Structure formats: structure tokens, C-alpha cells
Image (cartoon, rainbow, N blue to C red):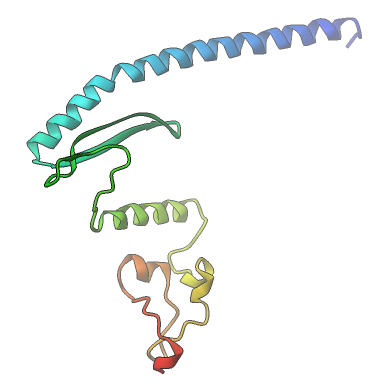
Length: 160
């Protein structure tokens, strides 16, 4: 390629990249406005659901591309004391985290980052050398924990 054509081609490439970035920015701005337009409907749906299901309070958020776009709340975090629910409210969620944890572990399995039959001590080093109640007990695996097939009971030295 001739040296005199190189600056011209580089200028065309830089212009094309800049043009595409401005188109992307415009598309992103339109997308953001479209998402923001749904906020009143989202608020209405959560409020109606809380009323219909007799929820004393709820806090919710809309996350898009890893960023919190919108949050809202309804009702009370403490119904007896009439303390309104807000973004700092802590709610008791019994065993709901088990489902999220299981799904996250299965996602890691699907990505090849772990195996369900891996011993737990590979990920929790403190479990290595765990003393079990019987000498023939095998190491606790991720599968054991997910299916509640083995306990992670800590046996202290002073109790043996």
C-alpha cells in the first residue's frame, strides 16, 4: 500500500468508528428512555401484587446490565410500628436464599468452574481435614450440600 494512501485510510477508519459510537450512544439513550418509561407500570404492578397478596411490605429493584435502574417500595418493614419499607429495610426471607445459591452453583457447574462431586474443601479450605463422626465417612461434596445429603457438622477436638 502506498504511504500517501495510509493516512487517508486511517482517517476513514477513525471517522467510521466515531460515527458508530455516536449511533450506539443514540440507541443507548433511546433504550434508557424506553426502560424509564416502564417505571410507573413496574411500581403499579408491585403495589397491586402487595395488596392482592396481603404483603405488609416489599422493596424491589430493576437491574439492567448490572446497574440499578430503578427501585421502589411499598408498605412497611415493621407493620406493628408502622415503619415504612425503604431501600435500607431488612426482611426475614427464611429459606429463599437456598434456591438462589443452588442456581448460582449450577451456573458455575454449567460454565465448567466446578463439579457437583467436588469435595467442599476445594472451595472452603477450612473444611480440609474435617473430622467426621465415623472413620469411613467420605468428604462432603457440593452435591451433598445441595441435596442436604450430608451435614457439615463441625466436630471439635475437645468432644472427641
